[in-house]
Each structure stands twice: as structure tokens, then as C-alpha cells.
Length: 255
Image (tube, rainbow, N blue to C red; front, top):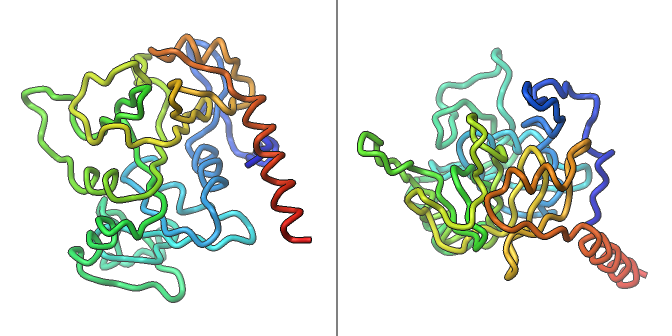
């Protein structure tokens, strides 16, 4: 899929994405969510993790229908409601208020996990503490003795959902790399991540490791390399050529 950075709404306030120390501009959380939404195919059933991924529900590209799923028992989840629209009986798995689209369905959470484990969910967007170059995901514990075990449904999601997208800041608040050669935190799943969206770039997990396919505006490849604790391959040109080829093939098939 060819992506034009101009399609990301530049009218949004970029101040949240400016690094105070380095003055480098990347994507805001909202722009990250909008970028993720561009890669979700029409008609997909999508589960959104707690935290940053929740923003994705606000963005469905024009002309597409996306059905959002939450593991506590809702298929057809809408965006976060305004303060005057909140219904305390309608929440997501993170216990945050949500809305429901027309035709939404409610069910027991056991049925919800049957959907997940039965591979009926097409895409899952999760947050991450760490991701390895092989696609290993660590997103539930730092492994400290005082940490509260709370893996939740993440292990089911990475095992049962067909495609796993990770949406995360590229580094920690202290500037430490989150994309590593090998995770040091307890794993949620091994070799499960397909694509990573950070405030700096979009990266695919390939046999060669981390393959960068897109940079956020005003961010250089060298800047991302310096903040990635593993080999990073620049695949931008190859990705664009592949997207053009796929687009031409699709056009021919519709003629």
C-alpha cells in the first residue's frame, strides 16, 4: 500500500511529538493512530489493545468498513464518547467508556475469546514495552519482583489473531530503545509481530530483521537507527515499488 505522508492530517498539533531535548518532530499519538488505520483493510475485524492503540478506533478511512472488537464482549465498538455521551454500562476491556456503532453485538467474554482463539479476528493492534528483531513481543511486565502479573488476554491475542500490529513510542521516557535485538522483559509471544508503528517510523518484521518502510515527517533514517538497538534495514524504495505494483495489478483486475 502506497502511503503519502500528506494524508496524515498535518493540521493537528505537532507539539506533542516534539522532543524537548532534540527538537525532532514525529507523529503525535493521533497521527500514529491515523497511520495504523490506513493499513487496516476494508471489512476487517480488529481488536485494539489498551493504551495508545485505543486511538485507532477514531479513524476509519473513507470508503472502508472496519469492525472493532473488544475482548470483554463487544463487536462493533465505536470511538471514545464525548463527556456528555458516556454510558457507564458501555466500556472496553480497559474499563474505558466507548460507543457502539449501528448493528453492534454484545456477548459473554468467553464467546469473545472463542472468536480470538478460533482465528476469527483479522488484525490486533497492541502496545509494547519491547519488540525484538524476530518479532518477539513483551508488553505486560518488566519482570521486576514488585511487578503485578497482568498479562490478560494479550497472549491469546498474539496466538489467535492473524495479523499483529504494534503501536508504540520508539523509545522509553528515558530515551532507552524499545526495538531490540532481543527482549529482556518476559515475552507475550514469540515471533508474532508483523508491523510496528512508532512516532518516528513504520517498520516491518522480515527474515532480515527490522525493515523500515516509512519515516515520519522531518525524521531522518540516521535518527531512527541511533534509537534502535538492532540492525535496521532501509526498505523504503522497495516498499514503494511493491505498493505501485500491487496497485497496478488491482487496477487491471477491475478493468
